[in-house]
Length: 300
Image (tube, rainbow, N blue to C red; front, side, top):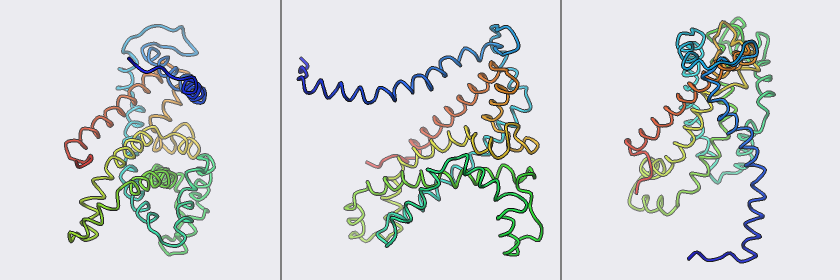
């Protein structure tokens, strides 16, 4: 028989449930309820302009014949390029701030400041930097790398890459802190034993540090992939809801917003969101299977 709780244990448990209740309520109202409510909408023609009817898979057929949806999906997949870049840089930064050098605390704070900076404020600042008379063009001219101003915000070949750079800058500190926690969780005795056995620094990193850090790499990679596919704020602030210039920054989240809140076609927008959710799920399953087959989890 299970032991009965004492009055003090019951009070502590009740207090704990009371503390987590606000977070759970917010999660239910603003996350799970919209998901549950949005699923059936994907199979209707629900909009502000027509009577709602059940139309089955018509929205999905429309999506896969919609050229704008294909453009947004292509741009979202291109955006995933930020994942390996941001993870490699974050690991290097974590290794740097994991040392016992002077001022290392200052560098930890400095690298983390972009994380706590408002995305809207950061996007506006970067937008100013990208202007033809902005600081970036000034620096390029000063260094002699270009002799004319580059229209980073107007030319399609630069627009998406410019937003990707903002995402990398904004997220580096966040993933750095996760990797720093991972590095500090590795027992120093293992590394010392490897050095005693004659392993050099590179071998210690390859045989001990990297294998034990892989669970953190998997977590950060999953979060980064989901964030890259769902990117919205920086694109919306810097280029608006139409994905200008010439659809070069039109990603699935921005296109979903455009369909829902400009065209008022909520059923179609829900279908697009469901397709994107399935793509993210497929990425997640692939990464889990790849890490297991590749032996990238803990070495036991």
